[in-house]
Image 1 (spheres, each protein chain N blue to C red):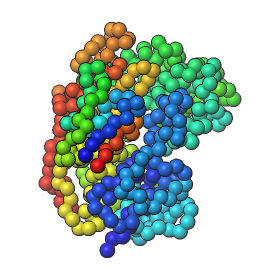
Image 2 (spheres, one colour):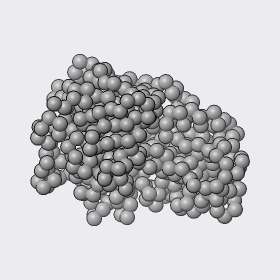
Image 3 (cartoon, rainbow over the protein chains, first blue to last red):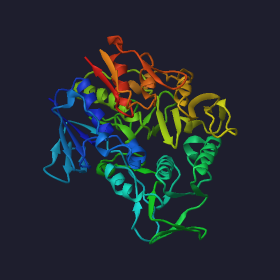
Image 4 (tube, each protein chain N blue to C red):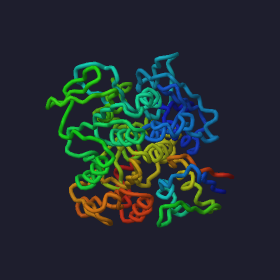
Length: 405
Length: 62
């Protein structure tokens, strides 16, 4: 008789997993283990309102559903190793914890730059505590160097400008957010940042960090009261070492979110590499807002079925990824997988080269099929993007072979 | 089931519209509108919408 499900990770994915295990009928014990000392909280504001000081950190905590009132939370505790053979977790704090089923919701950690020089004044931004450390450095007139022009880098730059900080952004690519957005929209985004006074050093890398300065590969010296390294993230899979799993990029899941087909191990959120039937059979990690909830729901059903011997859900797993980014007064709103269609970008509405304040909606195509839509502009952007929802692929049913248990 | 949205918190991200288009919509100006007492059959979608709200501004009563 199965008794305990352990959830490794106590952020959004871990919380939703616990809630969805109850929704899926699991009445046994649930223990959620989280490395941070906090109950699950909302991360997107950490680079925006909470960093600007217009939202309190206290307002970020999620409201857990009543159904998880009896869940055991082991916070401030990390899982050092997972032994899948013995089904037991070794914790950094306390006795080993045996489990019958396991949800991996271990998330990501910021990648760090391996460059020589001082660590003083260098920040990353992933957790509440990271934001608490960074916020005092963002005072009017301070000089901030942001390394990395992706989501976090661009949002931090915009937030810092809003509070009067001098901002320089360094990135080896030619445009900000080039990977997820493609060239035309990334160029439009660059112009908007420049209009707000952000100085860009594109096509450049950091050579070294000196006290109060960042030296670039071409010898340029940037004065820096603080540095934010926003150069991407790495999946947290170290605790799964030694189990013979493919950990080359997160945890490799089947179409039911079982890790390598194991009936007692599922993955949710950023760490899960899964196929999305909406697009193709290629497993990918998706670091977007809507994914922890979507994966938690499906993974919880899968795990409860695996532990109780019930049949698996045969419906295709085809979540619609959605994400947004607020920079200055502009909203970037995306649905689908624009990153898969950056080779064929078409303007669906508006004008990319025209008025900087105009709204623009861009479609991303693969093999002639619309796979993602991104809007950049004011309040009406989201509504405009939403109208394209039904034009995206819906996701075919799973081929029978992948449903077999 | 009664849907309550804290419109003072709502920033019109529209994530609820993607999750439950039968219940939530944005007008052409981008402002949120919603069905206050949706059919019980839509509970799953409404719960998803509440979960995915970036401002956690949606509550379900009953």
